[in-house]
Amino acid sequence: MIVAILVTMTHYSTQQPHNKQRPTLLILTLIAACFGGFYLAYNANTQLTPVLPPLAANNSLQRWLLDESEQLLESGELHHMGTVSRIYARTNYQMLWMDGFSLAPTGELLLQQLRETSADQLIDYQYHLSYIQQRLHNMQLTPRAATALDIQLTDAFISYAEDVMSNQLLPDTLRKQQLLKPVAYQPNQHSRGIDHDNIIRLVSENQSQRQLNKVLHGMAPNHNDYKQLRLALVQYQELAKHWVPINEGPTLKLGQRHPQVVELRELLSLYGDYPLQKSTLLEWFADDTPLTEEQTQTLDEPLVDSLKQFQQRHGMLANGKLDRQTRTRLNVPPLQRIRQIALNMKRWRELPADLGDRFLWVNMTDYSLQLMNHGVTELEMKVIIGKTYRKTPALKESISTLVLNPSWNVPRRIGLYDILPQARKDPSYLTTRNIRVLESWSNPVEVPVETIDWKNATARNFKYRFQQAPGDNNALGSVKFVIPNDMSIYLHDTSHPELFARHKRALSSGCVRVEKPMKLARALLKGKKNWGSARIDSQMESGATQYVKLPKPVPTYLAYLTAWVDKEQLIQFRDDVYQRDQIVNNTEGATVEL
Image 1 (cartoon, rainbow, N blue to C red):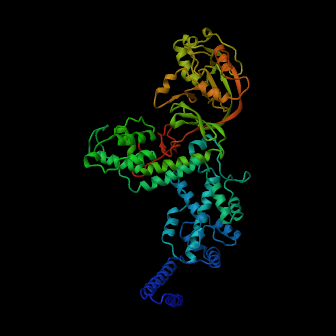
Image 2 (tube, one colour):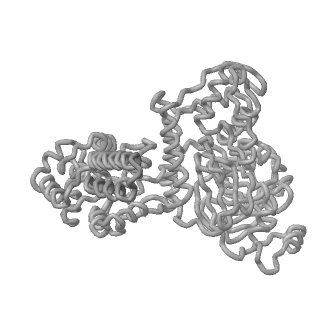
Image 3 (cartoon, one colour):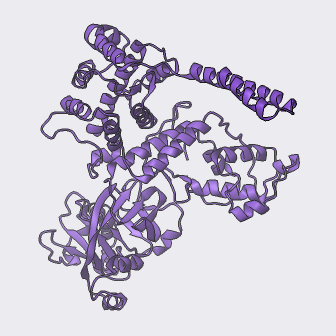
């Protein structure tokens, strides 16, 4: 560097003999550049992380696992020492998750999946996350420390793989029904319980960073909805650090002034609802003048709009008032929301990796149905789901047939406990509703109502079954959408459309009633030869029952999600209608009632 300066000085002085100031200026500039270069080089060198040679890591792993395994076990954080040792022996004692003294990309991905999987805290996950994160935070720059952490991560991976393969990560309510199949890796069909040979083979045959990365991605759902919930989980974990609940107070509405409006504004800002996102044009002309003290305490129109968005995101009536119900939801602890999000992420494990190009999606907690077509909502409507004591099950099947002007073969449970008590009181109840009594399911011969001893008929001795003829008062309405299952669950019209005006609609005996049955029927029959609108209308007017096969089976999902991210990228929460979330707030020891 100094030689270069001298050469430059000589050259410049020979070219500019009459200017004495310029060489001096140039010399000072070059000297400054020289010292700047020395400083940058020194600073960069001090910031470099020490390198861990592969051979040193290899030797350290062998010492841990072959000579000093007892010391590892003394930490109490290893659950699968034998399997861990076999994995490293099969991978030639190469580090799997660490890149020197920091996490490799595979280690970061593994840690991410362990964190999101265990965030619901529903079971005692054997991932020893606190221990791993503490070691990472206080990382000692020695081969022993780095390789010990790699071993801990491998042990955590084995526990995670066990949970995935055993369906441990599927929500209990759905697992008991066994109606939905998990998406991730499956255990060997011929093995009893968890086959660790499969786990060892999985790692040893995919030990490169690229291959391990692929394995990890395959162990979690790849749905975009899952990834959006992952982002929401991070958001709530971050806002939990700054969250303060709003105090009790009076109901406040537009234009009212109160000191608590300041708290409301801060809380809605933390949740991301205030201020509302505006278009670029509106942002350009927006008044960004700071609010006065009086304005900050006034429930103004922008704040009311933000409050309405919060209410809508939580399945409430968006009235823009800070009332008791709204305060309750504002004060749900972030920890509870974190656990709720994490649990709903697991529900995506129940679903196929590919939902289909065109499918029906019913979210029970939202009381809604969507007909999706290549990612676009083709049709949407309200639905009515089962009562809390006659819950609609989570289900994945395909609709291939619909029935126009259906008769209703009353399920035995409904017949014995709903219809029979009415018939005992007044047998004319049946005739006024076009309900027939049939001999049995196998022998559908009509039994005259007057021949039955209704006075002594009970749920225990009543051997007949009921069937309701097509018509205006038929419980199934004008159309039924057949879902193959052994629980008599299907989609159908209703003879009580006024019930769709209710906000909470857990009102049926288990089936799903749809708000716009004929629109749905026309959409599903679209493309079927000789079944255009005129033919459908004609068949409906005839009153005759007609089974119609769809041009193509339509995958149908009856889902139970209490948290999801909508198309506007807003996190949505809904009440746990059937108490399937099982979320408990650690700070109070009980679920926050909504």
